[in-house]
Amino acid sequence: MNVLRNTLQKFAECFFVINFAENRHKKPIYN
Image (tube, rainbow, N blue to C red; front, side, top):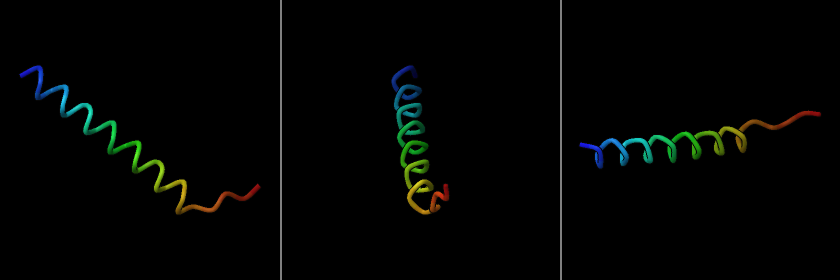
């Protein structure tokens, strides 16, 4: 079950990283 847990954690990390990157690209940054 440890392998499944590690895979799930890696998937979650990748998902959050991709989601964060997409949000940064979608929202324009005003200085």
